[in-house]
Length: 232
Image (cartoon, rainbow, N blue to C red; front, side):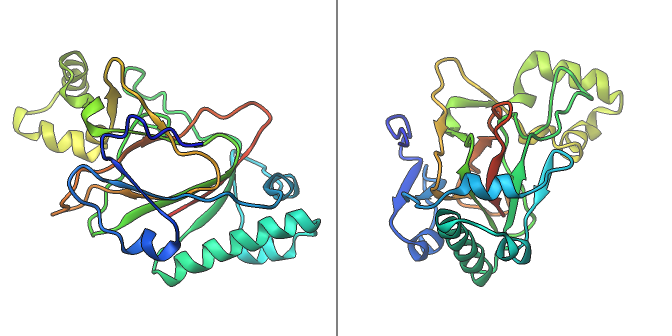
């Protein structure tokens, strides 16, 4: 179940792929969810994929070649369909089996990994699509419940110490190293979990966008339980 009790008009739910890709973002709404109850055994697919590092990418040919049970085949059919409809839409989806993402410890006071609340940026109008088929799922956060980290005085002071350059170049430094993309949840904020099986479209930060970008983060994975994630 998706808890939509604190969305502040942020989320719009649809019932099919066509509405997902054609419904525009507007005003506070910067996340659209195609709610689905998927059938099939997605965990079987994960078990068939060897993950040598932290993440293994599963392409369509590899997916088709997997020897699966009837329930695994049902799951594969859904994955192939999602990949194909997104490609037909012009997106470039990637299917990943994830143990965990790399943690960023370069700047201990300011991690910039995907476990931090952040927004995606693009130079062209484009949306982020994602679906968790198995394992822990991502969170999003209403923009009104977040503060851009670079605006927090204590963090800003630490960033200036790190920068050590002229005042006029500071803002460019923040953008160049993606510090401006990260956010802190305000006290009593209510993150919204995206759930399993639902295909989401999230607004990104790009020039002349009419809505605020959707703030989101990757979940902390459970030890011994890999995630199956489609993202583009």
